[in-house]
Image 1: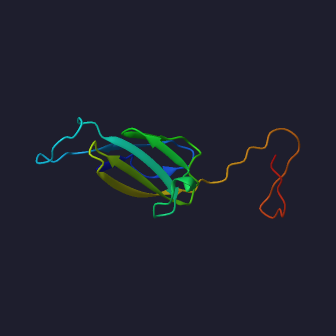
Image 2: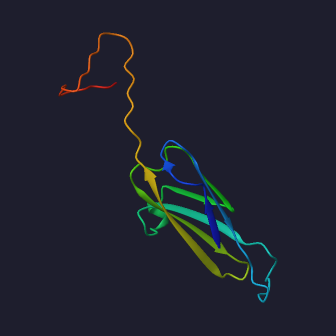
Image 3: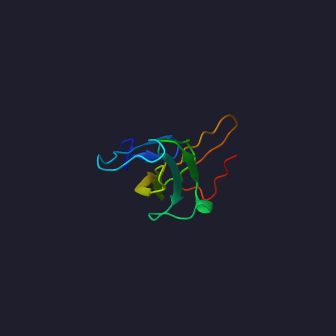
Amino acid sequence: VSVVLETPPYRRQQGLTAIASVERSSCGTAQGGSQVLFSWLVTPGSVPLPAERSVAQGDGSLLYIPPGTLKGGAEFNIRCVVTDPGGSIVTSDRVIRVSPAPLLASLLGGDRVMSRKSTRVTLD
């Protein structure tokens, strides 16, 4: 199983696409057809976790993770599980780090002053 991801850096505000492919052995026999099933789990941390802890799941050879799904400054394990018609299972894991995004604020209207020495800032 080969998993291809977009080129880093990975950012919270951008979507991410993962594509899996399988190269079958020429000495293997296809049982019940040649279709393989792909499933995906994206979990926090560098090791795979159970499905109930996932932040994203999917089926098929392509997984799209929408913007805002992955927390900035954190690592995530992207696991692709491939099952062949005979029931054999193969997995491939990729670990990514999502870059933290800088804090951006927009103050519109009114007389709002903010300085470096301010002790409190309220953003609404």
